[in-house]
Image (tube, rainbow, N blue to C red; front, top):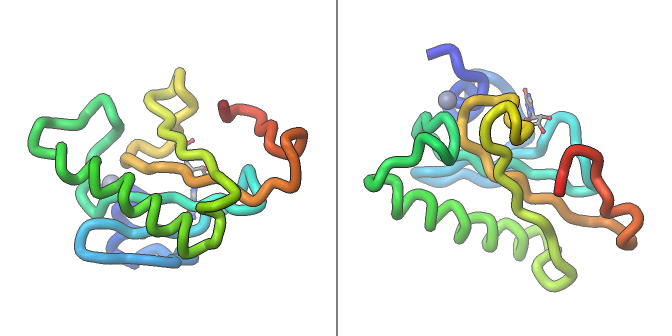
Length: 118
Ligand code: 5GP
Ligand code: ZN
């Protein structure tokens, strides 16, 4: 399958990977929209939230627990961060492999206003 994020998960395309385990790979966004912009992806190819099946219930739960773990590791848990899923083209999704954006590190609320992000 010709999917960029599958290739990053398989490490055949390079990325700044900061964490990986049996189910997830976590890496820096190539075009950061915040001082800290991380993507959390499952190794399993799922197109988007719209494509989740009942069997993915535990995976999606673990994806949030991974986000929590990464926020702590990056020392942004206390100060705060955003978690964002873009869903479909109308929602701003350009890569058709499920990914959770973790955004953080702003100095103040003005800096936190990100074009194209809630
Ligand atoms: P989306 O708009 O689909 O929710 O987010 C896709 C994200 O993937 C974008 O923020 C974009 O900058 C990032 N991205 C696209 N191509 C690459 C890549 O080759 N490597 C990395 N690390 N991030 C990418
Ligand atoms: Zn994929």
